[in-house]
Image (cartoon, rainbow, N blue to C red; front, side, top):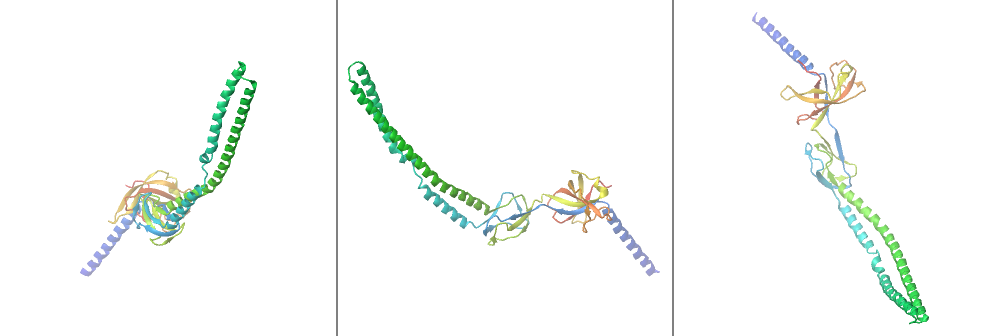
Length: 322
């Protein structure tokens, strides 16, 4: 009799325990309308220069600020090339003619001749007045006129020589300058390559994967590390066609995540994207109606307190449950 009662008690206890588990599962199942996994926009940062990685100071899981230099690639060859170009510019620049200096003699000659011409013109006016007063002969006036004409011809010749020399020097200057300008452009290219040899973090975020190490060879385009901004994380969930019409962009929803205590931790979320095309239910995703074959993907933005990780499962409640 005692054994029989013991069996009855064990049987009743088992039924009670399974009823609690079944009830808890049902209650948990009713607390969400859709589920999915968390994801983030991952950026793969590549090398922008060729050479040995001289420094690369990051670790997976580390949080980095945008614009922070985290390493650099060897720039010895670029530095030497820049020095060579600068030396070429200096050597070529030394060949540039100094137009002002090389035409100064013509200006001095022109100034002396102009001074003599001014004197002769004054003499001409004086003699003209004397001739008008019968105090000088017409021959004296003719002589001074001849001197004025001769001096004017001399001044014209010197000015023409100066113009010809200036034109020739400018042509020479332009030709040499045309050799220097490409060198300046090459220096700008080297400066750009020097800047790209610095490894600069592009965004605020958390390092997800490190693909390279210090002292390894980097080539342009080689992935160095991946980073994502996890301050706000996205839950990609799936809804059925029945739910599709009741969901809208900007809608506030509840996001539930398993807590280490065994309970569900609640976050506020906002619907940021709704796919207008149906797709087959992913095998790893459950929806409110598990029998639905076609579902719609949605994205929900959730502010991350540091707990949410990429790949974690999350559940969504579109309405408050009583």
